[in-house]
Length: 123
Image 1 (tube, rainbow, N blue to C red):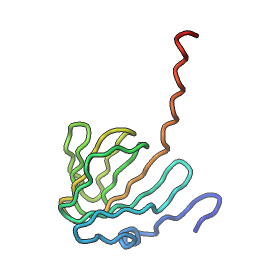
Image 2 (cartoon, rainbow, N blue to C red; image 1 turned 135 degrees about the vertical axis):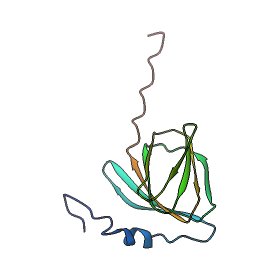
Image 3 (tube, helix red, strand yellow; image 1 turned 180 degrees about the vertical axis):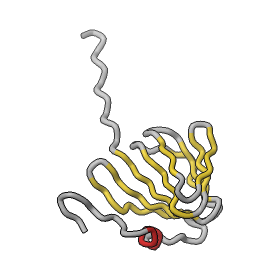
């Protein structure tokens, strides 16, 4: 239900998990909500699958709904289980590996505003 004050994205965890079942040997993603200030993306990963190192143009939070993953970010290897959350800044390289079949929620913030071009040295 959507009105001027809020949007219900999911009523419970089961609804989030059912929205994107784990595909054997696969990594799947789908955007489930885009609103002012944030976008929510559901990600499902089968055990042993990986997302190679990449960057996001926007800052993000990675939350584990079910399963277990390892995230390589900032020279650190972080293991997350259900309820675990990590924040990753815009432009920061990171990689994700599913240890168990896993369901993740990505919350992407607004992209940083483009920096204004530096003034010409000649004035």
